[in-house]
Length: 416
Image (cartoon, rainbow, N blue to C red; front, side, top):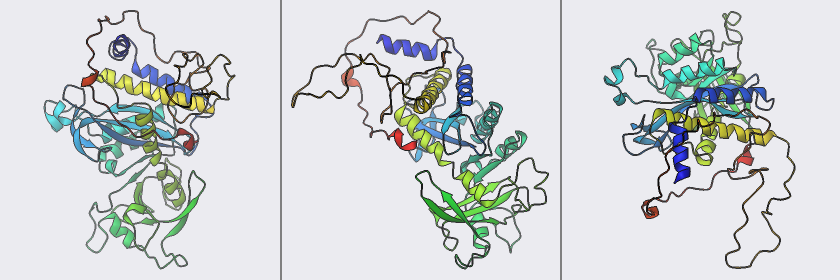
């Protein structure tokens, strides 16, 4: 179809630079008071995979796909999101290239594990003007020394989850894993908490919950050390698996000897818990970017085209925020009534006229196009005029296409 060919040409051949478009998008986010980064925000790092057939597409291979919860053939992208719990939006993204794409595999000098580009993306976010209190990540990134080193060189603080049973060197009579360090803390009950401190967590729907947190000691971790081990849980006695966090951070303890000389301001237990509590917002962004805006629904093969598709999806996500915060505009009286008073009781109604008003004029539970409004600058360069050659339409092959069934998308109005 001509429209499909034009889209393929725009993603694969059209002369525009993806980094310039993304830089302009981030610039607009910084300039708007509603979306500008504020103190106390975080840069969240994560990676997300989607299944893809074949082997000809760039970056595709058998690897762990978190969305499916198994190893399968697909593509994984490392991403960063900025959030303060009020707004959240993607910053940068880079597809991960599995080792088998390189001549020497994992020993190839060009090969990078996921934590290495992740740290680079976090540093780019800071350079782009999105300052943060800390970089936040799950336990998949806590095992990489290169990740810690890159963040330290970039001057970034971090709060990262640790695997509860990951061992470390320590004397025989001392804890060797984070969960052993947590069990070594004293606890009687809520009236006599021992080493534990109550922390009130505030959730977006208005409810609060009391957690318990403590500085633990494990190997080189400690409240007076450059790196701290924080344990947070709903039950210090039982340490339930799904309601207990083991966190490493280089934010100094307020009473630590190096607190006054550290490049990062001190943070108490409540602050550490608040920062890591912002990490799920990247999961929320995945739901909307993928289920609503089609992040993984690309039909291109080259690295260049994949990055362009992802950048345009991120632009659409940012346009949605712009539409959300913008005051309602004037109604177009020439637009057809979406809810006419009289409709046929049964049967197929008449085909409605083509809409003439701006799509997505207000809040909606489904994705629509959002106008860039008062930003007349083009987000992407126009085509250079040399479009793709249009072929005559072939025979109808709709019978060969697979129908994809998806659950209804989430209501975006719930995340105001």
